[in-house]
Length: 393
Image (cartoon, rainbow, N blue to C red; front, side):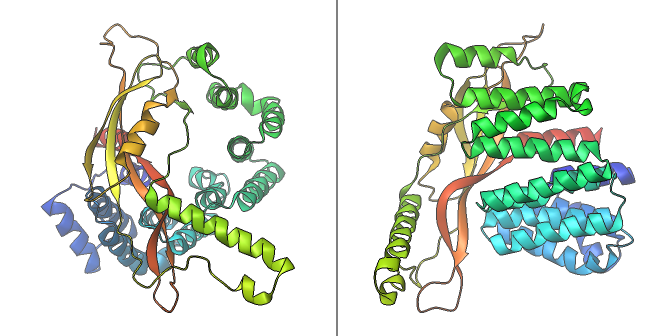
């Protein structure tokens, strides 16, 4: 959320303050006394403050009100309106409402593409948003199709930067879905493009190639790969390898339900229609999972290993934080060059993890409810704080 808030602040030359004055600024917008830009700034800042304290539904309500006030102003003020949609999508994803998330991302993309020239930086940033959305909702085939369509359209229009971004997203997706041969072939193609010779893109492509190699590397081979990507002292380390999260009890139940449904669905072709209609473990009307989140801090040492991972704050009753700490302990990041003032500690990182959930309609009910599924939505709070600090200078 802070990224768009940063862009909006730079555009106007002002920063929305927090605390009581933030509430007052937002109320002025609720009363209709703000421009779309000011409304976006105040609403996103207030929603972010509520999100950070775990009040996800309150944050959604703030942003929903801002959308209602400003959605008719997309033609005159596309960037502020798109910023509100993007912030709403972020909160909806963490809160578990995938329908709201999909609609918000689609609205964000349409607002920008319909009202700005194709070479505008905001349009470029939104080029792959639909593909990202399908990745987040677990639909890899649709994500790949979206990235491919974005890349083809960008190449046809001569927008090399947008095409490169979409192409790199395709490489990342091919790697994540265990298609390393296809990923390397696509990466070779991107390396041959003229834009690949520019320093920023050359580094990004190099990181992608290292991530592909690191996926199957262990021991000294992995250490060598990590050392080969030196980072500057002011640059955040790049995640090169991480194991999957272990499943907690709720996620194990969801996985078992999925396997049972898959079994019945495949066996129904050889059985009766009644068999296909049986839910092996139906959601009950009493099923309701609370939003569970935790802020985890840890050091990334200069050699790319992690240390001292700890839960800084969290919602009540989290049964999964030990699983997260174990996963962080096994991550490997890019190595960092030692600076003259380096105390050996490395880079401190803070992540917000929210247990991934979705809404379902239980058996014998008409009301959708939030239930836990495997994995976590992650937001880099270190990066958010860095952006806010730069904006305030």
